[in-house]
Image (cartoon, rainbow, N blue to C red):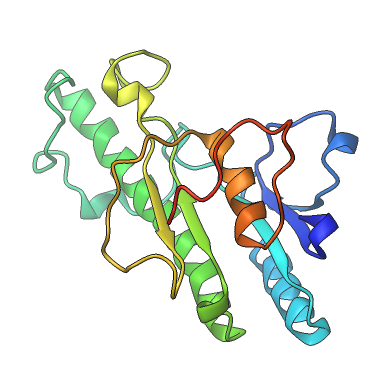
Length: 199
């Protein structure tokens, strides 16, 4: 993306190394996106006429689930997935987990609000991906369906029809070539993954 004239930034959690191989503009607050830095990135990009590629990486929904307002998900009213044993402790934990999802959603909302603030909505491809399931039994770290699936929501005005869905089999390795293709570049042949699964 840098070769295509983009500023490439990562704000929040990182799982890459060594860092010198990934020359992002790094920022973050407690393993979460630094919204002030993201705001500045967007402002500078508009002012300078420079496109940007931002990876805003949240540490949520990792335990301990201590963010968000769990009171809006009373344990006695939560609907547990069928693979979770129904106990008071599980209900309490699932309530906190749902609250943390809501907290994560608010982070996404802050970034979307910043795009609107800088009038970038119509010119920006937004992709939101989740972790591979929750960390309850039979989910994350397993080969069960709930440990292998990640949510992916895309907003790309003029390219992706709002409300549309696809049954494309997508892996994270498809994201980089898709971004490069969307930016008008040609993905390097050494990169794994398939470009333009969004179209």
